[in-house]
Image (cartoon, rainbow, N blue to C red; front, side, top):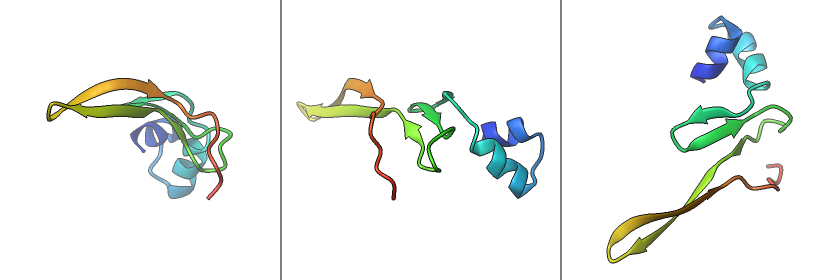
Length: 70
């Protein structure tokens, strides 16, 4: 949302929605996120984590190539 507001240069809801729909490869805490060309379902990085000896261990980060429409 921060990136969309910054891109829109406004807090107008329509301007934010339009800017959000154009966002591409925005760096977020969990990786990157893209709304451009996604019909509103974002493409985003997914982290694979396993529990080993009671501790979370990062395995890999991927971006799914197929995201079904809701």
